Length: 243
Image (cartoon, rainbow, N blue to C red; front, side, top):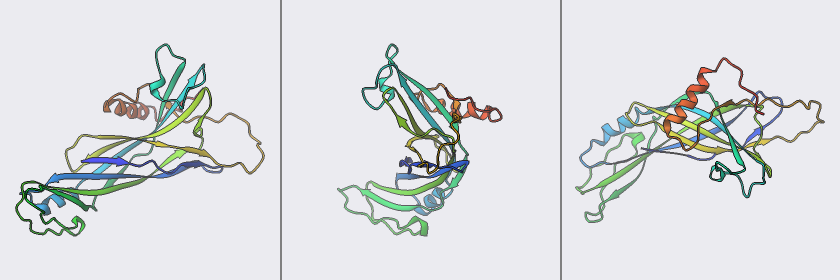
């Protein structure tokens, strides 16, 4: 089983709203050999799969005493170098999605044995007889789509000579109905400030909505699980203001 996600559309931070949203789409692919396998039972197994989705919004603020040589990334960071990173994460609303609709994609039969007939659309539960072959790989795909909402006081994405704010979505997916390891996806996302059509009347500094974590992106899956747990424990406390 493999999961892939595409970068969502930029989020426009407009006035008069408490939150903004964007749609996330994740493709789920399952590939396996179907020799001597009851395809109908396998399809029924696929339709029992679901995911509990735990998303978080990650903010990486790079800052430096010298101009960045390029768009800052973590590879620029060194112990004695001028560049630093402030890493934060905001827990977003969790959701669950079943995977009841699957489609058959392709097969990969052994060329020594010739082509084999393939099972039809899994959504219709059709199974066609197959001739004998040494190895027949079949792939099914499904899609998870869900909406994420973020507070409207998030600082838009920006980059200057000595400071940069970049965002990504950390998506923890826990499978249900089947025993597989948890998945963690990280997808970049852009926040764009809406044009201001009226004069500025409030010049007060906006409050940043993030709760701080200090874990690195290079840590394993447990790192991200700890991040979500840390934020969950402080749900009743107001998040600190970013300086």
